[in-house]
Amino acid sequence: MGALEVREGFTELYDAEPEGVWAAPGRVNLIGEHTDYNDGFVMPFALPHVTTAAVARRDDGVLRLHSADVPGAPVELRVDDLAPESDRNWTGYPAGVVWALREAGHEVTGADVHLASTVPTGAGLSSSAALEVVVALALNDLYALGLKGWQLARLCQRAENVYVGAPTGIMDQTASACCESGHALFLDTRDLSQRQIPFGLASEGLCLLVVDTRVQHAHSGGEYGRRRAGCEKGAALLGVDALRDIPHDGLDVALAGLAGEEEVARLVRHVVTEDERAERVVSLLESGDIRSIGPILTEGHASLRDDFRVSCPELDLVVDTALASGALGARMTGGGFGGSAIVLTESSDVPTLTQAIEQSFTDAGHRTPRVFEAVPSAGARRLA
Ligand code: ADP
Ligand code: MG
Image (cartoon, rainbow, N blue to C red; front, top):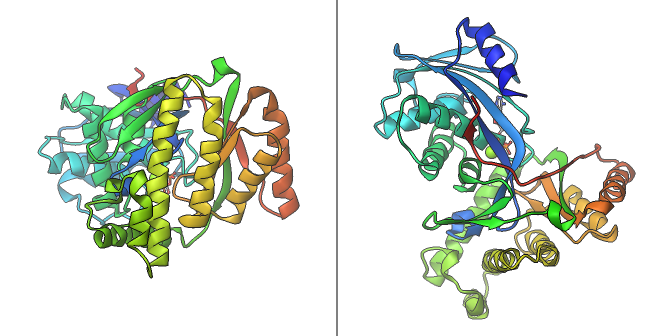
């Protein structure tokens, strides 16, 4: 969906020109899963898939929201009436951003918004963050708020946590706001310090495939909450602020201290080893050795499957089939219980791999997955 189409859509709906057009991408997480609520490391990169928004200011307190993906007229709200958990529809995300900005003391007096997206929704690729961040960036520019990417990300996270009522870490919004083309973003979720890590797949003859299983098992929300609570319990039992504080070489001692707490111990082992895997991936990428991260991705999958227990048959099938067909590494990405997996492969093997994965899904009686190449792309930006 190009800037021009979204601009034209705006003009048709609102009978006026937008003041500008902005885009914010979805993301995949390369490594560092279920670490973001443990103050640990994550490493997302932005997808070429974006949510594009045409926006104009209003000074009468009215907020009108429209998505090309949702049939019907624009939804009209009043900025003074916005209240947490009052909106269970898609409009809760952009309205939540306006609410969070105003709560933080920024004078946003209304807007007309029309948007369209190429980010698959509910596939673990963060269409919700793309939606929030594109609106936040547009309002930041139009109202000259002067907020930086990481600040917008924080406000968007607040919109999603408090206004929408969905508990999520800070990774998705930071990735959408701050990623750079050709790079992955190494983010320390404790202090939000970040580093752009070169991730030039194409020049190495490599490709990273995203496989959207197109399933989302219904219990995923409750399971997320249980994992989160289990991690908090682990930290409390071990006397640390967050599991991030357990060093990798202190893992055995920590696990010994969790005797009788089998489930918590497994969660702790995943988080501590996952942080260490993220650090190993960073050093390999910084030394230009992309191929060698493959086995680390696969290790990460085993840990999510066996210790953290958030995988599912469809995700395991992608990983097993990819590895059996010559992939360098593969793992589930995102929260789990469905959503997407990533596969690192030689570019020349993409057709064979794609075919093998699709065939395995047919054989298992699953719906055909959506397979696409993820080129590390730019973060949120103004298009026009
Ligand atoms: P994910 O972020 O992994 O795609 P979420 O459940 O967090 O999944 O967010 C998906 C929700 O975000 C959708 O159900 C919808 O409410 C909202 N959303 C995302 N993109 C759009 C869009 N382009 N138009 C309308 N709503 C959208
Ligand atoms: Mg989301």
